Length: 262
Image (cartoon, rainbow, N blue to C red):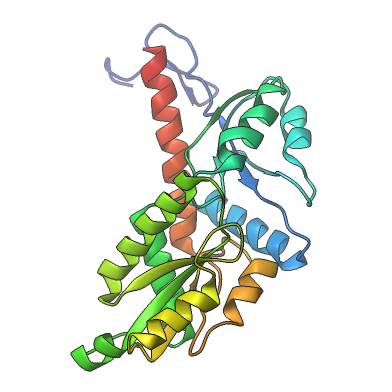
């Protein structure tokens, strides 16, 4: 051991003053919850990817509603552990602004909530990948781009911030594809997905794809896919870039905590 190497105890790094470096806070994935069994399977597969990218990081799961484990139960099991809650939600809205903070405040765990996953360029990367899997051509020419468009199908919310975030994702995907991308919704906001499809067709866009802007399969994702006149992509799911984005949001929240402490 050189003079500049900190001493260790039982193989753990310690600070120069002899104190052990605090363990990283646990990561709690906060999913919405769904009656669709494939949703839980998808979220658990995403958890596996996150653990594979960050071995040793404790990763837990809690749902806002409908599916066990529910978030309050997950937080209760953590006791007074430090944790970062990462919403598997694609923009701001009631769940991010009200439900998750209220559940966190009622728990004894010392928590910080990360920002939702979207908007972010990694989501545009995943949306593009899912469209390619569905049949979107990897290379396009001017003729294809003039006759094609995408409807970004999202759940919808009455919160205007949610619509703002979805529009930003649509712009990121449009820049990536080189075709118009119109946000549309399954509920609570307009336009509805079929309305957006008809509007694009009326403008001469005869190849309209549905990009499924959902984290996992469910009723809304199925409903939107059925409106596709051409191809419809699968939900974002457990794509590797989704796992990287989860860890990015986790790290952002940790950095914010460290900055405030300093």
